[in-house]
Each structure stands twice: as C-alpha cells, then as structure tokens.
Image 1 (cartoon, rainbow, N blue to C red):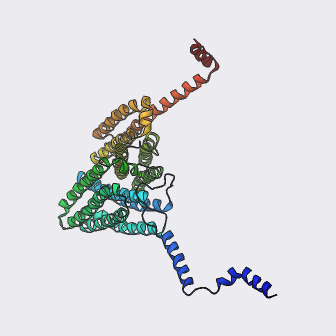
Image 2 (image 1 turned 90 degrees about the vertical axis):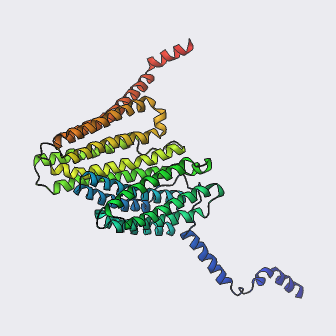
Image 3 (image 1 turned 180 degrees about the horizontal axis):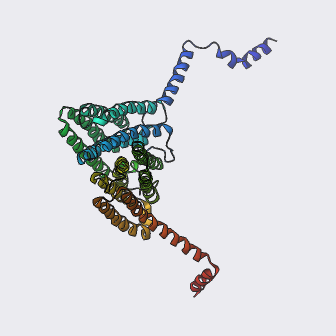
Length: 445
C-alpha cells in the first residue's frame, strides 16, 4: 500500500509541482498583455518598402481628404469674389501649399501608416491644423496672412516630425533620402513661419517661391533615388484610388460654383441655361480625366511616378478655379460678352485639364501599349487646348462660351470612342467563320 501510494504521488507529481503561483507572476502577465495591446494600438511606422500592395483606402483617409477639400473650397470662394489676375495668383499659391501638404500627408500614410490609434491621432492632429488654416484662407493675402503662414508652418512641422519618426527605423539605403526629405520639410516650416513678418504683397510672393522650391526639391529626391529607394516610391493601387477620390471631390467645386451663382440671381430661362451648360463643362472635365487617365497606375519607374504625381497638381487647381469662375459666368448670364477674367479662367482651365490629363496618361502603361490611340489623342488635346484658349480670348456671351467649351471637350472623348469602336469592329470581323478560314488558309500556305 505504501508503494502504491508513493506511485500515485509520483504520477500526480506535475500537478502537485505546479503549486501556488509565484509572487509577481500575475503582474508580469498583465504587463505583457498591456504591452501587446499598446503595440496593436500604437504600432511603430512601417519601414520603407513594406507597404501592403493590396491595401484599400479607408474612411479615415477619405475624411482627411474631405477636410483638405474644405480648404480648397475656401480658396475657390475667395477667388470667386476676387476674379482678377492678383486674385488668380493668390489662389494658385495658396492652393499649391494646401496640395503639397495633402500629398505629403497622403504619401506618409501610404508608406508608413497603419490602421491604428497612432494613425487616427496623427490624422486628427493634421485636421485640427487644417481647420485653423481654412479659417484664415479668405484673407490669406491680407489681414490674416500672418496667421495663415503660422498655421501652415505648424502643419509642415507636424509632417516633418512624422517623417522623422519614420526615418528612425530606416535601413541604411533609405537614410540619406529620408534625411533630405525631413530637412526640406522642416526648412519649409521655418521659412513659412518667417513669412509672417513680411508685408502682405511680399508674403504671397514668398509663398510662391517656397512652393516652387519644395516641388523642385521633392523632384530631385525622387529622380536621384537609388533602385532600392525607387522601389518604395512606386504608386500603388490605394494611392491611385486616393488621388482619384480627391479629384472627384474637387470636381464638386464646379457644382458648388453653379449653385452659388444661381442662388444669388433671379432665375430666368437664360440664367438657368447658362448654369446647366456650366455643369456640363464640369462634367466634361470629369469625363476627360477619368476616361483617358484616371484610376490607372503609372509605370513602375521613378520619372513616371513623379510625372503622375505632379500632373495632378495643375489638374485639380484648374478644376477648382473653373468652379470659382462659374459663379461669375452665371452672374453675367445676360451680358453680351463674358467678363475677360471669367472667360480666361474657364478657357485656360479647360486647356490645363486637357494638358494635365495627357501628362498623366503619358506616365502610364496604356500610353505605351495603345499608341494608335494616345499619339493622335495627344495631338488632338493640344489642338483643343489652343482652341479653348482662343474661346477665352474671344469672350463670347456666357451661354455661347459654355457651349463652345462643351463641344471642344467632347472632341478627345469622341476620338477615343471612335478608336474603341474600331477595335471592337475588328475583333468581330476576326471572329467571323469566313475570316477565320481565310486566315487558316493563309497560314497553311
């Protein structure tokens, strides 16, 4: 019996050996659980080249884009009330600053962001600064220019810190390019803050110089990137979707401009006709971009990616400016001739949309694969762009100007449709039995 008891005790040894928990074991387990939770909610920035290719755009990014477009709307509203050459220059400078900040933040999230509390916090921080910027945009060229400069400087400083935190975990081959980018963004923040001390006229000019310098520096970093760095700069499907969504939201400014013009005038048949024609002009800009270049990735090359990114700046700026000019177009619906500034903004805006679309399409695979379409399309868009400028110079009555732009914007689309119809007809002919027998006989001979 004693032996059996000893054997039973030995069999139960592991259970008996577990004993009571060691002091501090529960606290260590809780610390480990909290550490895992913290890592899941607040992940470190994703290293260069590690972004998932199948990622889709989330609602957080779309909300951020919407916040940026509020600033675009503020700039367009300011332009609508000051449709002069100085007003156009101020709009271009302010829009470019906003676009650079948006593209900067979008690229950071694309390359280094996660869908976690860290990303939500950093996006919220940027949105809070954007709201302050938006409040100052209506008088950015005047009384509130210094406040706008300081707010924009804060946004660029936040972006510089985000890029710096991401650069801390970079592999050696990425460090030089990352440091250059962080240094450039931080320098831009400092210089923007310094412009608050300048007079209003000099301040806007300084912003324009900073726009040009930043874009040139970004282009230099991309072009001089090593093969390993270039692989991390490839435009992904999610970034393509992001730029397309931003373009769509900016296109909404054309509808806003028309509605604002109609709401501020007594409605007559001619006023309504001008407004509806202006909507079709905006629709023509949408059709031009999305039918010929939108939602397509560029070739996996540094210069192609840079060309694709840069082409969206004049495209979206021109669309927003056209939306601002549509307010004036509707306001002067009964005039014998369209006001000069309004006509020029609409004609030049349509020309820029055509040119930017061709610039973007030239960076894409389709431009190389389907040369039978894109080579004549480039020449056609160039001729149509010149015609749009001519319409702006002639300044016909608002309804005539709108109809002329609709007709001109439909020409490239008509060429593309005719080309595709021709391809479909050729495929149908190839599928006919007689044609297949003829081809088989020729091959046999």
